[in-house]
Length: 438
Image 1 (cartoon, rainbow, N blue to C red):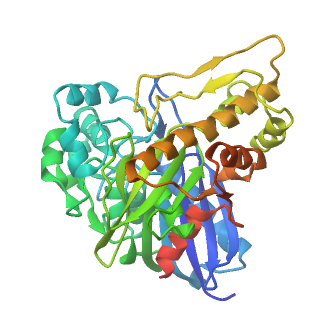
Image 2: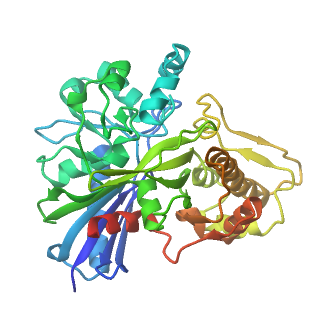
């Protein structure tokens, strides 16, 4: 077997790894599911050790599928669920608390108080983000107040946790795209913001150093001994994997949530329509930016229909069922299970189903969930077009739900533009591989 780039994609519901040949083709893939825990209403947690075990297991499966050995790995790329906070002991590399997941709402009241105190505009100016419990800063502030050992712990997003484990504690590092999702990063200057750290009552000493998204970042030791040369948050990695490198190009990833990103290059676009201004990636010290619309629940609504209500037996049933009826027969599903993200930013909103009749079938409910994905995406695209002053000419799509023809066709009809689905929908993992292999 020839050399491969190993891409580790740690998502909200599972860890995917792909072994990519130096020709850019996927040679092998592995996957391991991860458990989400809901200890209280509005709280969402992961076990960091389970995350690490799942990443290891998926990596072994990918290499086995590629008929490759650990010694064949030329470089490692990492992409990850963003904003999720992990705290660990710097010496033992053991977590000091469960990971607080990006969907977690426990700090909604803290964000509301900061908004009421008039801090929203300044936070937007420095970070490009809004005051919402989605982001990392208030999670860290909560942990520093409530978790024993947090003040002395290393803090970071999931990429930092994985690098710490891969490097056997030698490195505490993140990349600029992940740093830009914390509410603690100055996206103009490309450094941690002391002003934001003071506002949120956190210490920069807990945070990792910030590296480029591509280049010599760290090194993996142990079973896989190779340089770590690519890191990006999952949505930025998908943007890169979809080759959205020119100003105005956009993609949507239909996963647990959906995330529309439009590349704006060196131009930082300030939104007046509820979008986020974020770092797409940093290469050779130069920042590239993107506009982002974060939709918190799309594919997760189908998981809920499967696991919570038992309406479908597997996610693969959703597409055929939704396509078996011409419409949702007046049923509307608003999947605000953890509040609403862009462009509404309402952490207190909750899910709603309306329009049920005696004639409603499970196909109509599934169709309503699929339509909710497409309508929420249209809201975001329209907001982006308002911010940039120019129409979108095509939307590139990926993620697990993008395999549904009915969703892609509905999205194209609602937007009135081509929706393009790549041959490989694992563009998040591919993006990390490409960043690592540059």
